Length: 398
Image (tube, rainbow, N blue to C red; front, side):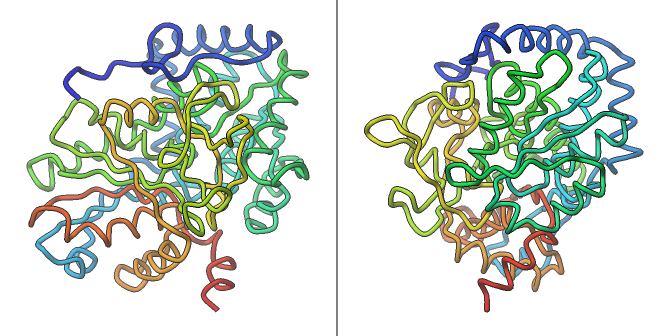
């Protein structure tokens, strides 16, 4: 990577990736969102309102915690800092984005939020934002994910959201997203589709990235205060990729800071056994954008598999695909068993139970000492807490 990364362009492209591949019905809504977001970014009152909600309601800034016992266990003088997004209200980074999009919905006069969710954290954050702002809320969630994330289903309903079980396809995040888009097509005049990751048609990958960039902005200031230098590595899990992009983006032009995204390897890298889109995917269109996609030789979307509902998705954000293309970031895979072991490992070394999504990043962290220089400084994005996954972890560990 030799050129500064300033993407997307005016048409929403990150190099060859991104763009808008949607029905004509929602094109005007995307154009409206693009105009309103451009104006909101320049509006001091909007920025101040969002900043106030992030600090007084969501709980920012989150700590950059030096994990001393974890670092000592890894050895080689490595210093690991955890960006504690798990300490936010609702228990994950998703609230950074939903508060921003909720304010945009109010600005556009929309009375209803719709959203897809896999692990349930984006659904909870959307329902929370809707309750806060007095908006109706409807969440689309795969039936399989509702089973394995039952706690979050209860939380959403308590917050006043209506849950739509999705019984088609694999009954997971991909199918929930498809159903949410179908709803949006028919209700676009009064509904705002609150996409939960850096995926979908322009301007969603850009605006979700921008709302999540508070993670990296804070981490940058905090690591300079703690170490008087930038980190050597940033590590984060990648499904759609919002927590990773939120951490990476403010460091995008610091070429000495390496980015590592960790995908779900499931049971192994055979078709249908994983959700490792950047490791095994091919370029294609899914849910309104051109990006990397798990597909077969006929262009049909592949079945995915991951113990982590939030990573169980056959696509990825177009900006991640671009970072891979220009070699700004590297992407690796972690299998289910490694992630389960890593969740228990972090719990026992630091007293922190991570969600299964960032447990994948912790698993890769355990591999790193033999491959990097002594004394390296690493920031790992702990994107969510593990309460929601306790039953899944207990079932598999038993």
